[in-house]
Image 1 (tube, rainbow, N blue to C red):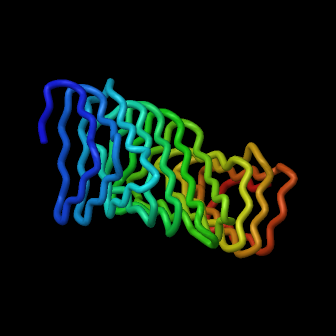
Image 2 (image 1 turned 30 degrees about the vertical axis):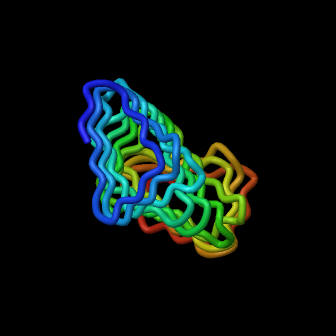
Image 3 (image 1 turned 180 degrees about the vertical axis):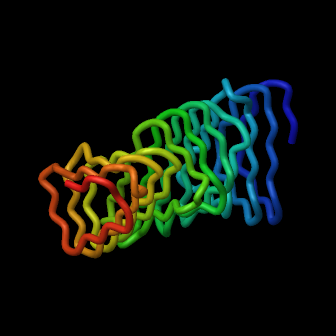
Length: 212
């Protein structure tokens, strides 16, 4: 579907792929059930808001968009995406993963609300410029994050493992409570400073300069 302006998507069931190109905001007013891949392009200045609670996507890629909000009732895979503003992704059940590089100029908020869900964003090309937060109302199990630059960890509680790979300093701005193993890789020239009121089990440093 191509629209020269904004487009609102009503309740839809698609057994294949969904491709939306607009020159304005992309929104939804009904649940979207998409079996195949979903590709969205709104333009760098326009928002994408697909926040119906009953949405069921497989893979979503954002070719262009400003502030992007995605809600999925089950697990969700994020394909290669470029977001010029903030990215907000919530899955009600299941895990949140990526299969393509995520480039986000603003802040990112990821939530996987199912009991024992995990957030695995491990594409080597990921580039998060703003702050990144992880949440899970059902209790997060594992978080894996890869970032092409430095990475700051906000407050986080995990029943499983934490793995952070960055091409820059790894820091914390909130307390980290990790029941499982914590694995950190900042690169040999970059510092790791996790000095909040943290509670780790086992910590392994794959690479880092000064570690405190």
